[in-house]
Image 1 (cartoon, rainbow, N blue to C red):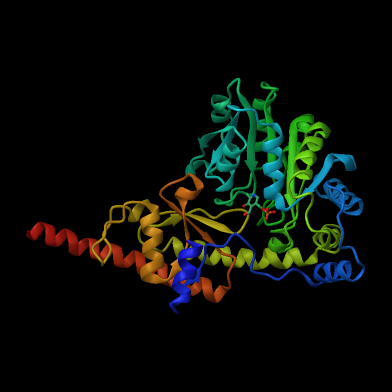
Image 2 (cartoon, rainbow, N blue to C red; image 1 turned 180 degrees about the vertical axis):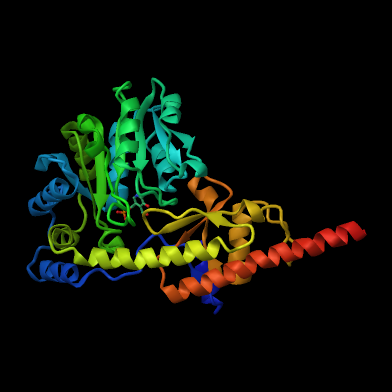
Length: 394
Ligand code: PLP
C-alpha cells in the first residue's frame, strides 16, 4: 500500500498516507545531539556484538525502573531494531517443525520470520469482541508437544490492544502447565498507552523469567525508527545463541545509534508525555469519525498508534465504478485509488475484513482523510442502492 500510495503521489495525486508504522515526530533533540557527539568523538568503530556496555547498562536500569525486571548485563542484547532481535531469537531457537503460537491479528512479520527460521506459525484468532486478546482457553488448545514459543505483543500492532497484568497472569497460568513453551514479549509500543497501565509478562509472572524474552526498543517510544535499535533481555543461553547469530550477520547495530540510544533510554524522557497526549487526541478523532461512517466500526484502542477498523459492512457492496468490494484489500484499494487515502488491509495482519489506520499523522491530515473515508463509504452504500434498483428493474 505504501508503494502504491507513493506511485500515485509521484503522479501528482493528493494521497494521504495512513499506512505508516512509525511516529511522525522527529527524534528528540537531546538524542540527536548524542548521535552527533558520538560521530564527533570518533565512536564510529565496531562495537561488541551485544552492544556497548554503557548502553546495556542503561537498558538494565530501564528494565529495573520501568518494569521491575532485574537482568544481568550479559542477559541483554542489542540489535538492528526490535525486528532483528525477534528474528535472532527465532533463528537461534527453532528446529524444523517447531511451532510458534502467533495470536492474530498480528504484526505482519511474525509468521514469515517463523517460517524463515524453519518453524511453523500456529495462528490463533483473537476475536474483536474479546478486545482482540488471546483467551487462556485458546492458548491451552493451541499448545502441542512441538510448541516452542508464544509471541505476545502488547500494546498490539495492528489492534492497539493492551493486556492488563491480570490478563497476562491468566495466560501465565496456562504456560506453567507447559514448561517447554517460551514467551516472546514484544513490548515495542510500551510507552504509547492511553489511560491504562502497561505490564510485561515477567512482571505479571516473575517465575517465567527463565523462559521469557522481553523485547523492546527506541523506534516507537523515541521516534527513532531509522536509527535501527532494539534490544532483548532473557535467559543467558538464549542471549548467547542470539549473539552468535548476530555476530555472523550484522555484527551489531550502528555505534552512533547505540550512543544516541543511551540518551533515549537513560536520559530525560519528558517528550514521551507530549507524544502520548498528541496521539490520544488523534486516536479519539479517528475513532469518532470512523464510527460515523456507514459500514465501518472500530473499538477505542488503548495503545500504539493504530485503529483497527471492521469493514464487514462494506463487503459485498458495489463501488460507483461498478466493482464489487469482495475483500478488505478491495476496500483499501478503493480508498486509495478513488479517494486518495492509504490504509493497510487486515489480511496482512492475518485478520479480515479489517483495515488498519495509522494515526501517526497530523490532526489536519486525519480530518481530511476521515472526511474522505466517510465519503467513500457513503458512495459505496449509495451506489449499491442504485445497483439493487437496476437489478430489480431488470
Ligand atoms: N514489533 C512490532 C509489533 C512492530 O510493529 C514493529 C514495527 O512496526 C517492530 C517490532 C519493529 O520495530 P523496530 O523498528 O525496532 O525493528
